[in-house]
Each structure stands twice: as C-alpha cells, then as structure tokens.
Length: 418
Image 1 (cartoon, rainbow, N blue to C red):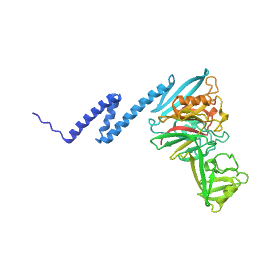
Image 2: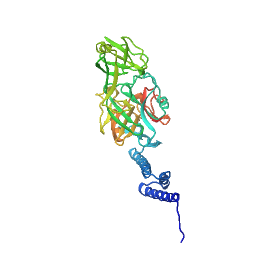
Image 3: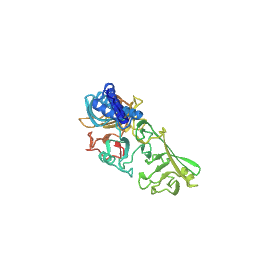
Image 4: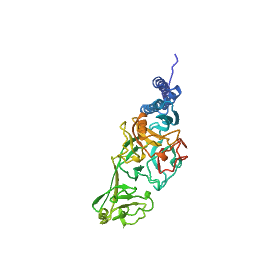
C-alpha cells in the first residue's frame, strides 16, 4: 500500500480548496448567485484563514448582492411604464408622465439606496465658496462639487442670491430659519447616512459681561427692528446699517473691538452683532462676547441642514402646512421640486416640469400625494417655479423654462466623497 504524506502547506491548501467549494455551493443554492459571482466571494478565504474575517466579508458581499437585486425589483415595480436608467450602483433616474384631469405632467425622479451608493454623500452646496451673494447655474454648481446628481435647493433672494431659510454645510450654519420653516437634517459619518425632517427654530445666543442675549437670526434680512442679528464673513464685506435706535458691534476672537450705527467691515475671524442699543449695550461693559448656535429640535451630530417648505408628507401622511409656513404665494399649478426619504432610508429627489402644454405642473397637494405614493415617509417642497432644475450625470434632465435653468443660490447634490 502506498503511503501519502502531506506537509502543512499541502494540508492548508486542501482545506482551503474544500472550504471554497463548499462556500460556492452554499451561495449558489441559498442566495441565487451565479457560480462566477459566488466563486469570487469564496476566494475571499484565500489570503488568510481567519474564519471571523472571512465570514464578515462573505456576509457583506451577500448583503450587497441581495440589496442590489431587491432595489432593482422594487424600482421596477414602483414605477411601471417609466423610463428607468441605472446611474450608479444604488442610484436610479426615473422619467415618467402622469395625468391630472386629462392633462400631462412630466416628472423626473432620482431614487438612491444610500447603502448601495457607497462613496457618495448628500450635501447642500452654495454657488460660491466665499459669499452668500452669488448665483450660478446648476451645471456650474454640480461640476464645482463633482456631483453625480443635483437638484435646486432652498429659497433665495433673487436680487442677491442669499438663501432664505436654514442652511448648514459641514456643521457650519450659514443662514438661519425664516418662519420656522421645515428643513431636512442630514446625518452622515462617512459610512452611514440618515435623514430627519422637521420645522426648525434657531436656538442661538451671545454671552458676555455676565449677560446672555438671544440672537434672532444669522445672515438673514431684518424683519423687525427689535431683532438681534449676527452677520458672518459669508454675508459679504460689510454689515448692514444698525436698526433705528440700534448699534452694530464688531466681534473678533470673542472680543468686542468696535461699536457703531453704521455698516462695519466684517472680520474674517469674527462677526457683527446688530440690534437695539438697549439690548446690546450691556455687552460693552467687559467687551467679551461668545456666540453659540443650536437648533430646535436639537439635532445632535447633524452635518448638513437645508430648508424648504411646506411639508408634503409627515410620518407617512399627506401634510401640507402652506399657511403655517407663510407660503401662500406658491400655490397653484407650477413646476415643483421636492426631497424626501422612504422607510428604508432611500433618498428621493423629484423635479416636476410645468407651465407648458406638454407638462402643466402640479399643485402642492398633488405633489404631496405623489411623494406619498412612491413611498416617502417624510418629504418637503423645495424652491420651485423657474428654479426647478435637475442635473443627472453631466446634463440637465428636465425642461426648465430657461434652457439649463436659471442661476441658483444653492443646490442639494450627491457627490463623491473626497
């Protein structure tokens, strides 16, 4: 009888081969994967024989494969008779036409599975890196931020481009809320992204000379002479004039260095406080001033915030609070933009064409019911009308009145993480 002798190296190779074949068989039978795909997963055991590491890698591969398959099936079922394009793994662009009272409405939808769309982050983007007083086309904004997807963002003042409403980018508050309008909070740690939508209030104050003073808004037009406003360098070079019976305080490195009723040059390492003299005068005693900015609700670890209004869907129910958010002027049938998310945490972006024979636009209620019908548990309206424009992989995909879309103050973009 011949005797077979195996050294340690041969024994390990034999065991690895056995395990690889077993894994392939299990994956093919249980997961419905192709043999080639399953073999690639099984080869993950080859570099080392750490069972724990191998198990984690295999489960991640199975999870991604299954999630991709389920996502594709779900999109096909959700949008029957629509044109569906694969943009990236987990990113679908859907074009469809619906009819309201026999009249057509053309709709562009981008739906994103945030777990499949690895290496991408959703963030608001300003048209300029240095100032709020700027407007550019969505194509320019998208290319500047290396965006795969872009949709026009929050309301803005047409004359200047200053956003009207809450805007936070990378934990920095650029502008505060107006009328406590609804906003989306984006929570991202680089690996996982979550969303929340709520009506947002500013919870900001300045402390100095043993006193605490409420700050009513940041980088927004003055609504009342009694308000205390803060202007940061993003506002521009100069602060506005102080209100009647008011004063401006120049704060650098948490110290007040100047007081005047006239416009003041905004420091790069500070801000201007502007408000009634009777309120701000106590700060001059010791000339120290520290600004603290929070929001209500207190969104801990929120990375980005972009406002809109009104609500469209709240806790899976249609909810359009147009009057409460002082948005009565945007009623009627118009081009629309919206953002929302599903119970599975899929991001949904929508652009609706309007004011033309081939697409008459939507009312806010029609948009709300549409967002609910495609599975949004929470959704809100964005700036619409002439601002409505959607960019997908290098081109504008809807049909705005102005070719390419009007110059915008800001956009919400899905960009590659640098």
